[in-house]
Amino acid sequence: MINYTKQKMLKGQKTIGTFFELGTANAVEGLGYSGLDYIIIDTEHGPYGEESAMEFIRAAKLSKLSPFARIKEVSRAAVLRMLDIGAEGLIVPYVKTVDEVKALVKYGKYAPVGERGFFYGRAAGYGFEDFAKNLDEYTDKCNYETMIIPQCETSGCLENIEEIASIDGVDGIFVGPYDLSIALGIPGQFNSDILINALDRIVKACKKAGKFTFIFANDTESASKNFEMGFDSVAISTDIAVLVNAYRNIVKTIK
Image (cartoon, rainbow, N blue to C red; front, side, top):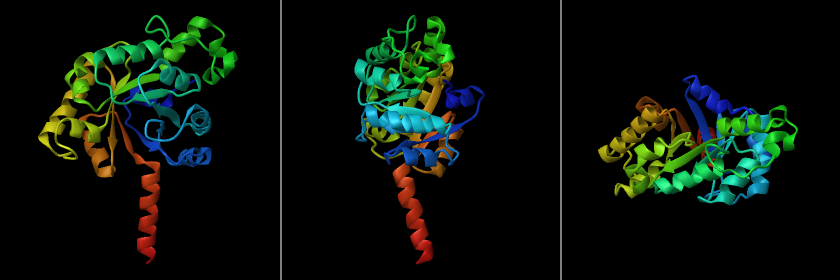
């Protein structure tokens, strides 16, 4: 169990991912040749449950892509099941309060950091991986390699971002600029000083706490600006949007 995306960011490298919406293991395998660092299996807006997500996770790991998952909600079941089937990072939407984030850590990290329920899931080779043979080594490795990443996309999360980022067990913050701009009363105004100041506040809070910063970007220009602002990672578009745009460009060029 090695979280390659985390390893790269610890070395100061910028990482790039995308939201996975296409919904087949073959698509994941293909993305493994793209140069992306990770995919985010979208179980919030996408129709995927644990059984299909497990196949995507397996394909991602075989392709050296870090398999992250955006879960549906802040609940023990939503956190536990995705980690047990091998998700290396959980993107958690619609976080509003400090207590919600503390609950996430409780569900997602083993003691002494949290209270995650013990299980030898597929990420541990069902107990047969070498690192799983010693209980302390196994729980320490799970805590280190699996990432809890709340989304900052509500005014409540933004108001509490310094405290949320400093919570032990939070590995990073993922910014949803669409929902955050809506929450700030400036929907879709990505060049607004209000949003830019909010992003700067999030980056500074995470840097001070020693946590990673992730953000969604629509295109390469936005992604480059996000990196210039200090973000560690960008999830660029969705795989299906990239596919449609690629074919549109092909058709336009041919015709």
